[in-house]
Length: 395
Image 1 (tube, rainbow, N blue to C red):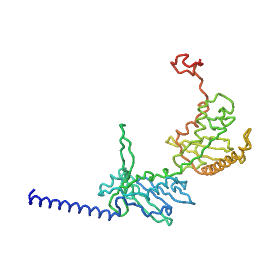
Image 2: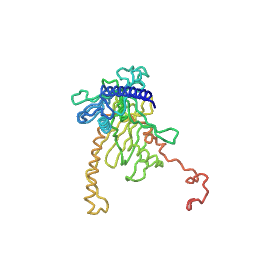
Image 3: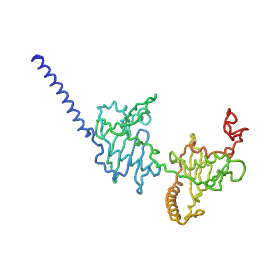
Image 4: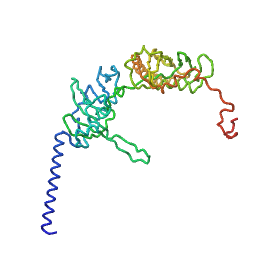
């Protein structure tokens, strides 16, 4: 290489270096202007214990979570209890939220990232609603905004898989900080941050277990009972042979029901033509459950009232040894304390009307005819086509 070529190359390196340096300082200026740098925390000074309110708003809905009487509640559901775990998870994630990337995005591209302010959305325009982000506001003890963020589209990672449809996992989210035009990508998708009030309800429901008798009123009246806790279910009036699996299905359904929402416009005492179920338990508790079909839906309205009190004294077991008494008494006392706490919470449910999926109620909604065991086919018990003598002792 001659001297002239070397000088030309050196000049080119200097020009490229100058351009690169200029871009570096431009990017650095953008970071400074947005007050966000890679690895920086968006809510570094957030005092979680001082947050007493959370508000989430999108183009369709809004939810306000607030602390009332030392408990989180959902204000849009008449103060029904909120899910403490989800609220705690959200606040912790916000304190750890880090910037992992920035995007130089113009206003015209914000709709693609769902970063349009909900306040600017036309609720009658579906495209406008779809483009809206979710505005998150954190409120302090005085009701002032302690932090705010506009949440946009989630960043999705497609996992390697031999399957035709690749698994996808949310790994981050596009966001906008107040008074900043720089779009940031943060380290968590914040999937719980939804503006749907039903999403934030505490889903602890009643659990009618250890049932002794279960009855259904109305045109499809029936009552089943068992003489002991692990005994066989039978019709209480003794008429007809009960389908054991159908009986167990109905009983188990009442021990595992869940609700999807609270009905604000339906009072517990105003259900239209409800069907009533009464479950009497071995804990001396009586659950009175009323259900009514929700119009234009597969869901049902449901109310529940609990009466009675669990036994205060333990009945000694037959042949119980003296050395076992202390252990069994302690176990009974601990179980009773947990049951009392559960029943106290369940009795408070009487003031609400719940929305429950019809599918989960199907085992209970059966008629008496549905509960009668079907006659066995002649030669039943042997699968069709099974050669005789395959299992010794079977005829």
